[in-house]
Image 1: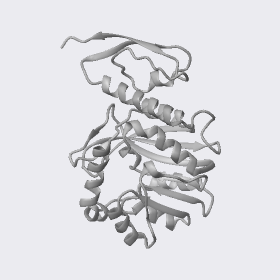
Image 2: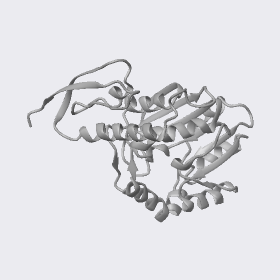
Image 3: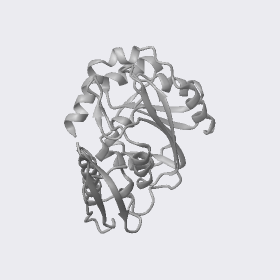
Length: 274
């Protein structure tokens, strides 16, 4: 996944000034709904703040905002807009514990590789105080890909995304779908997610060990890879409560998970005539 991340970061490095200076209007309705759920002066992390447009709106609303971005070039551009320090940190390196009351992740987590998203959602969860609020947005799809600028997107379906959030221990998960656009000026189906961290840490057993993380990543990667081809799922039955049976709407080959915590399931399939 290194090249995927590097390609995306290269775009923001090379186009930071243009990207940050574009005429972008913050999503005022969603920002207003987000702010309305917070106490005055609440500590908010603007995760992947980009050019700082939303950070400025949150600051003007009287919140204690910590903006951060993985791109040093974008961080400098945001600093000029909002007049305060912007931390440089990637999603995979978030190491905070119960520091924030809320996290605003507008069009940022959509760049996290699919196999890494569950881990990142655990890290984000841990950064919130109990009862903390997350607002995030993703470009909808069925499999990962790149846009015409070479930026990587995880393009999740609503069902796949909900499963990732559930796995990471989030509560009160609400996903709203809406049509809109983006920097590429293409029609876009958006998934706007709100969720709460109702526990001090993710639920018992959901904070994965290295071995379980590898198993999860391999499972997600395998299912995504198997989707490529002229096959569709005809029937899928899962023993017990295997959440990965619902990770994607289509699963192309019989799969058995070896992790003792995941019950095996089989997929019967048929091949389409093409």
